[in-house]
Figure: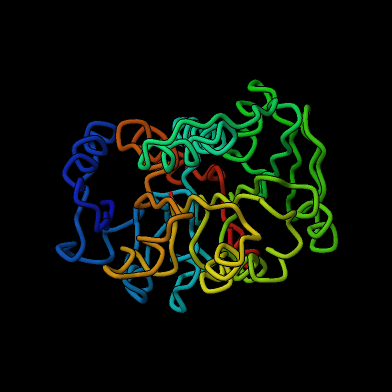
Length: 309
Ligand code: GLV
């Protein structure tokens, strides 16, 4: 049997090398040069064109090469009877936690304010705040949210967590369900989005959500661009209600040249790098999924296509 590989990433060769090393007895075929479709029993994919997966009749599993599976589950032709897995790699959780800690600290320490002052050669100190007096809300408490909570907790921040279903996590006050979202936003000076994109999280951060946040609050989006209504965000920044935002995800990527978010003085943009997949570690996780599928064992980190993650 052979394995299908599809990824538009420019480091696809690195992925193929890592996957071939982890699965030395397998042939890994790169779409569209896949040979007879019957021979393919597993698929490793990222942003595969819709409809393609439906053409392989003998799939035992489909593994996403990234943590988010929104693009995959949006495929109307997705063979839903085949087990589908998300990539949950501890290294990616570490990367996300580094990004979130750096961004939270940057805002907490007022480094944007001092950067702006430096551009005017202006020396002015502002009061220093203690981390324990700064409330950070993590929306999304999966593997990445939990790792961010550990690291931010170690830095001393006051933590709130919100998830779709109830969770209990040491060191933070957790709430869940749509009806508890408002009270989390009301208390949060910094909101970090770590949610999967689903019908329930699309456009979650709109003008009502921004108005619920305290004046001077800060938004960090490490989720998907579609979770944020960009025009409402720009309005909340322009009115002074929000102090600023760091965005790693956008409704359309790459962010278009000339898009107002690029040059907005209260916006920091990174090109979807908060938690990149790493071929080296992912290959070992993916090889284990193939081994399980062929041994008729349940796959790990299965996607619930109804919930969308
Ligand atoms: C990146 O956005 C991912 O889903 O892994």
